Length: 66
Image 1: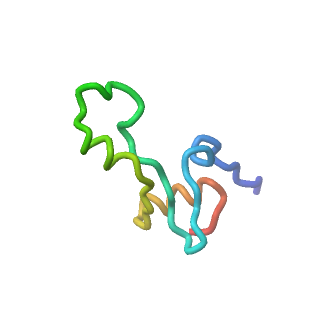
Image 2: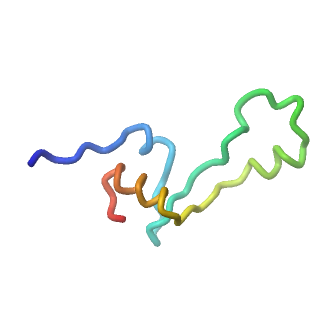
C-alpha cells in the first residue's frame, strides 16, 4: 500500500491547533470590498477555529490524525 499524499492546497490554507482543531481564515475578504460594509469586513478579519466533521476530513487530507 503506497503512502498517502498530503493535500498541498489544504496545507497552505489551514493549520491544526494543539487540540486537533482546524484554524482557518474567513472567506470573502480578498476583492470587491468597496460595497461591503465596514462591520462586515471587520468580522471577516478574524481567524476561525473549526472542530466539525468537515474539518476532520481536511486534517486527514493534510496527513494529521482525526
